Image 1: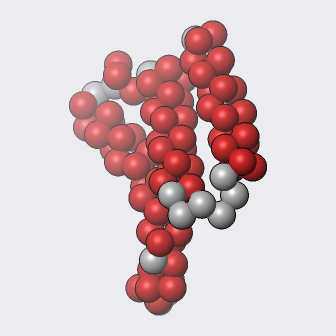
Image 2: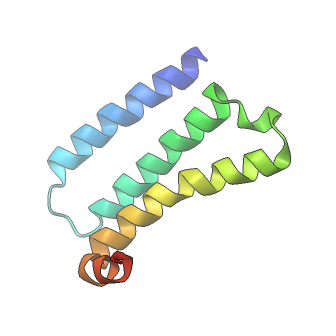
Image 3: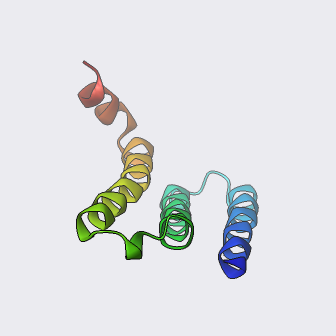
Length: 88
């Protein structure tokens, strides 16, 4: 659990540093999405302990942690089209 917290803090600081150094880079949304996915995986694995849950719950949690990075990438690269599709 200590290593999971340490990994979470390192990823947070890494994200802050990379966001500052590579501001405006075209590939930055992909990096942010990857960091968000890894952080979500850490939370599900070590804090929620999804690997001990029923397989259905594990699959639901995996889909849930994939949603945010996919939404980040879609809005970063296809923001206008994605916004038009997502409006009611």
